[in-house]
Image (cartoon, rainbow, N blue to C red):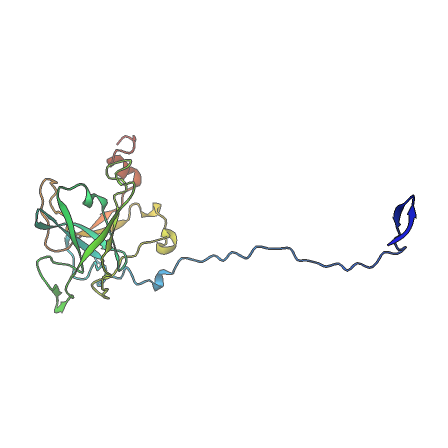
Length: 245
């Protein structure tokens, strides 16, 4: 308070004892905790279930229900229809296939994706007194090729997605999506490098002729077991490596 003046200047007088001050402890501001959400458990995902037990068959007809995620694509050229490529069902609405199936083919029009097929000339497919439901012919509403397909080599990034015009109807034995691992170590128990030297299955209706100039397409879904090669080996085949050999 002003208690006096010195040459017209006010003087402020302070008490001899300071007034008590109450300290307020404000806790430091902390960012909210980060909650790490683990990827979905594969145990609850209805995919990758085959209709039969595993067994080795040397490049022969696949048993009915062996590969319920297989898809065969039908197109037409100048009105002539043919089965020209395959793929796998990855969800009720999407098919994973190869981008080279949709190169600038003269007049090729993709018509349908057939799901739940086994023998192309027979409907329905039956084995040992049990028949599969009729295959589903679903139009494709969108083709999504890898944006870097063909770079840095002709066969690089050879992958595409097909969006179906409607969802596929799943079946516990004959129609099911394949599982795509988001984490190889967690989902399958070993790293990508540990794949090398192991055996993998290949299935489809592709040509069975060794001569690429000969088109010999099977009527029945085929399967064969093949060794997984090292990446360097594949790169050399595609001309991406200068490593001799």
